[in-house]
Amino acid sequence: MRVLEGLALYGPRNVSKLSTELNMPRGAVRYRINHLRSHFSLRFLGSLYHTYIGLRKVVVFAESKPGYEELLYKCLKFNDYWLYVSQCIATPKCIAIYGVPSGKEKELEEFLSELEELDQVSNVRFFWSTCFQNVNATNEWFDDTSEEWVFPWDSWLKEVLVKKGGLPYTLKDPSGYPQMADWIDIMILKELEKDSAIKLKEIAKKLGISLQRVRYHFENHVIKEKMFEGPQIFAEHYRGLSADTCYFRFVFKNHENFTKFACSLMKKPFIRVMGKVYGENQLFVQVYLPRQQLRNFINTLSKLIRTGFLDTYEYFIQDLTKTERETIPYQLFKDNHWVYEHKVYLEKLRSMQIDL
Image 1 (spheres, rainbow, N blue to C red):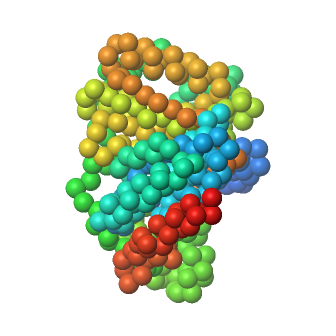
Image 2: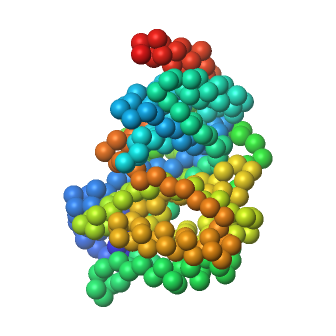
């Protein structure tokens, strides 16, 4: 757990620094990383601040008629700006996340309206969102003595009600969506999304340009201009505990309660990512919990509703065997702006209707 937490704090790109910060031999750190890879599906992904590359996020919930789940899943990916698509368990629903060019909001909404015109699809809902706050695993609820996870829900309930602190910039409504990247920046970001541990010299080799040029763009554009939020250290740290991954939408009565709730989750090991519904006191949260603890979490949410702190919520259990993540559509970044092929996306949906 020390290594897993350290990877999130110091990044996976420099094992030497990590070993120094953890006061562990470099060989021991590498051994632990390899152990996490082989036993806990450790992956190094990357989180982008899409707002500063001119992309606006939207979360979509959609349903299909039973038997047509695959069709819905396929149609959601007809739009090249999809970032994430996931089917749900025990219900013919899908969750999709897009990052569409600012100024193309009406076109995306038309695409979703056209999707709902399919006889096999219904109840398509969308929520414009801020960028997402990545939450990496910490040992806050890990007992070092017993080497087991503990889940003090009553303590968390008390924490939520009195929590103080400010929201990270990722959970605040942005004032605009400036496109601050050039082609090299976009290509660097694409590679970091796939593997946040990748070396700059490897990126330079892939792009066919000098290491010095890549380093300049990485330091002075990608990092300095906050296009890259940081590494997403993904590991199945509840391995053996029959864990589920769920997608929640929470609705709060006021911004104060929204802020307290979001801040209370910032270092919790059962949170993957969070995002705010633009202009609303609503929060998207991807939750990762052992099945038994998921029930305890929901019971705690019920207490928050009875106290009036939380207005309501909904959630879906995700099928991770039918979940895909995609990088930004770098192939559509031309002459330093995004090309949105609206007519192409609509035609794909309409041809699907004809085929059916």
